Image 1 (cartoon, rainbow, N blue to C red):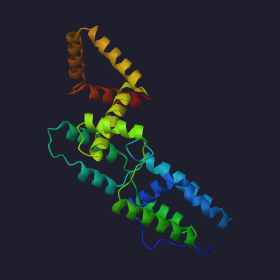
Image 2 (cartoon, helix red, strand yellow; image 1 turned 45 degrees about the horizontal axis):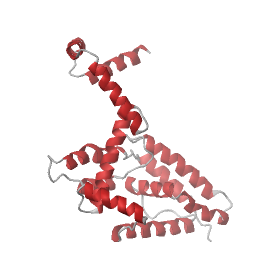
Image 3 (cartoon, one colour; image 1 turned 135 degrees about the vertical axis):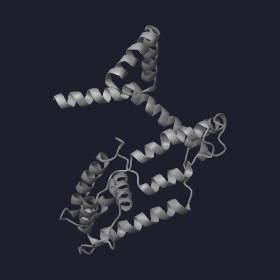
Image 4 (cartoon, one colour; image 1 turned 90 degrees about the horizontal axis):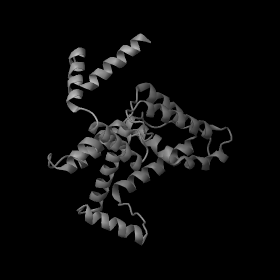
Length: 251
């Protein structure tokens, strides 16, 4: 193989960079096949850079997930889940969970980030970049022009068919979208209850309900209204923000 270094033909935009970062993050072993051809550790150096670059981008997104989303992918979600009936529960779930969750995984990519990534790619041997670029083009072509076949056992298929029927889903895509929305709801419940599984979340919710049963709700309302007046705000969340700000100033 040639050891001549190759530079990408054009400057990358944020979408292209995130696409490459996520592809190589999910397929880390791909570059390993080139290591023995280049003993100068240029492949290992790029892999190290990629890990650090990925972590840096993830820290600039609202979501704590290491999965990064491009603006193109967000637009696809927006097109797929544009509410047809704003009063339907399904469309409300999409608007409340799926679209915001997708949007929260879009990182902030600056001009300096683009230049840094461009320079890192330019240090890869030309043959490596050419081989990888071809692989990425084929992957995008297959994704755009072919349906994905998922292998499942007869038992799993029967279980999925039962879920499809009980959820009144007309297609498999509709079923998976509903299951995804339910999973997002569950994740939200786990975050709000500070738990890691459904039984603990249910127990925590029951504790909260029992606590409310044991207190005088009128007394709580009076004290809450008093705090709102005292802090000159409209809701409890603003009270918490003011208290946190005051604590920060004191420290």
